[in-house]
Image 1 (tube, rainbow, N blue to C red):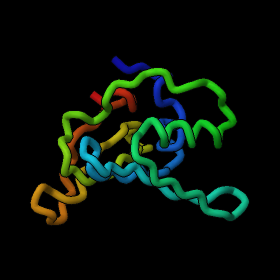
Image 2: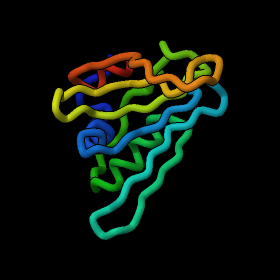
Image 3: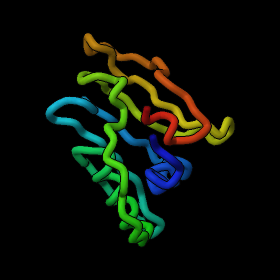
Amino acid sequence: MYDDNDFFATAKFLKLGVRIAIKNPMGQNSSFSTSFPTPKGTTVSFDEKSLYDLERKLRNLLASDIPVKTKLAPFDYLGTNFRGIIFHLKDMNEYVLQETHDLFGTASKRIVRKSEHFFQLLK
């Protein structure tokens, strides 16, 4: 199982208001992408094939040299054609996984899962 240290950088950036878009998490061409401004006025963009790769990039931004340890498959309950976003609700202190398009490709705003801790969204 996961714990707080597995994706601490991702959770930290989500708490700062960064949103992560997910496309096809269990398929061949998965995508975990995000884009956000820095305090210096530039924009940082990532489009990675796995959540682990995104976590490594975010840890580099935090200057953390702690390696990503676990290799469990996150979001395996979503299937292959899922499209959505992950974000943090500051007023309720909850992480939310929201679907943006359903299986048929139509727009959706269904909340798939909410939790107090980010690692609880993963399994």
